[in-house]
Image 1 (cartoon, rainbow, N blue to C red):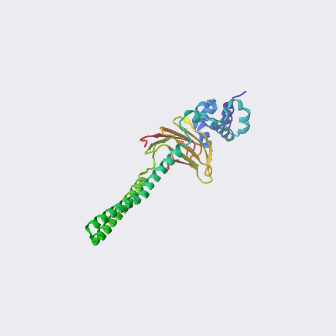
Image 2: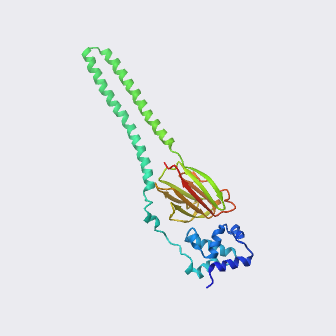
Image 3: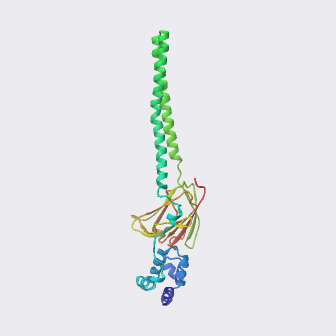
Length: 291
């Protein structure tokens, strides 16, 4: 049987298209087009993209992509789930929940202390009043008792208000101190972009969605391990990937970059310089200075 790569290459040549022409028409990187023609599927980002790229290639050069895939199903990698994530132990379903629970616990703890302070100070004030009354009784000076009681109550109230106010200010300062990750575009060329990530608080999340009315296909790797699920996303169907404590490298392969929005720990990632000319992009993130 004639190899699928030869069929596609002959169809491309019959149309008079060069690989550069086909890259512009399909928005698939040239190195992937060459891999398809040579049958070298190992360098492809995943089985999903092998089938998607072959179909797009075939349709562009005038062939029936679905039929071509069906006729050569035995030599094309099947799309299947990956157990790497479960086996790797890098992820735990509760990591993001743990982070949220931790923040919630800290907040409630601060609130509990603040709510208990006035009661404690009131108890101290009552003890102080009893002591003053007892002393006044010994001195048989009722007028002095009233003055000292009023003074102690006033001072205790002021101290209580100042303490509660101080606790509130500390809580507000802690909230303001939370920083969003800083994502800096280092280089961008030929459909490949590199970013440096600083001030990232792990564990965290990577969120990928599409602009209104748009869609794209996505593949994400964390520390070299492909994450599931991957596939098509839209504005109504975003993809969220949990980033564990040991995250150092993140790679995102995007099918339609202009339609895609990427957020890392709440920070929106800037588009590569050539995202309009080459819409299929590979974005590599290096995590530095983890908090």
